[in-house]
Every structure is written in structure tokens, then in C-alpha cells.
Length: 189
Image (cartoon, rainbow, N blue to C red; front, top):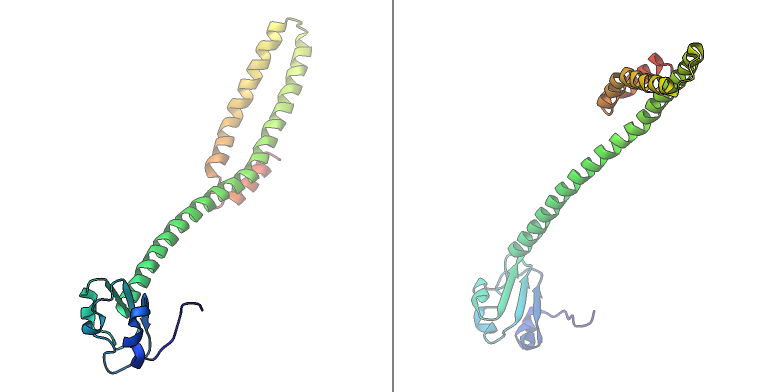
């Protein structure tokens, strides 16, 4: 990798001037760097990944030196994980909402053809009976035919209102599939 070099800590003091970031990794029983070695190195970023620490914590107070150790890295990872978990919770809520909407759409796809069949069959019966009644009456008055047309529409709509409402209210509820099958059987759809 360009700009990356691996070097032993024994040669560290001679290389500090050319670094912008120093990553310490490994193990050591002694401090590799102390505050006196870093005076004048502004802009230097040091990441100490060692346990125990190999860099004097007092260096963080030096002007221009940023020191991060495993505790800082762990805090960063924990913070990032917490943010992601919050995002996961938000995404789960969105998914649950979308699944509920999808479930409702699925029930509508099952229910709508049944309701359409119910109303179509009722309309066929209404038109057939209206036609027979108009023939028996022998009336050629268009106002009578129009009044009977409206009357039969209102009767059919009122008769079908409660069964259709019950079906819509139960859509998606537990046992709806069985209710829908019973509904079709009762109305012979």
C-alpha cells in the first residue's frame, strides 16, 4: 500500500517527523512513546491498539497530537453499532407497516372478486325481475319504469350493505379465510 510503512519501535523517534498517522500494534511491557518525544509534532494522529497501552496518555494533552486507544476504538464501534441498531429498529417498523399493507392488499384481492360476484349476481336478478314486472304491468310510461329502476337499485343496495360491510370489517382478521369461504357458500358464489 502506498504511504504505509511497518517499522520496529526501536527506530520510531527518527521516523516521527515524516508521519501524519502512527498506528501502534503489538505488545510491549514498556511505554514506546512519551510526551517529551512528541513535542513539536502538530497534526500527528496516534492510534494505540496495544494492551497494555504503549503510549503515554498525557500525549493527548499536547497541542496538535490526537491520541486514540483501544477504549476509543471500542467506544466508536459501540456508538456505530448503537446507531445501526436504531436504524434497524426503524427499518423493522417500516417493514412491519409495509407487510401489514401488503397483507391488507392480499385480503382485498381475495375479497374484492367475491363482493363483485355478489353484486353482479344481485344485479342480474334485479334486472330480470324488473323486466318481468314491467311486462306484467304493461305500462309504457317511462316515469314508472324509472321509479321502479330506482326502487330496485335501493332495495338491492340495502340488502347487500350489511353482508358486504361484515366481509370488509373482517378482512385480515384471524379466521378470515374460513369466513370468506362460508360467505361464498351462503351466497353460492
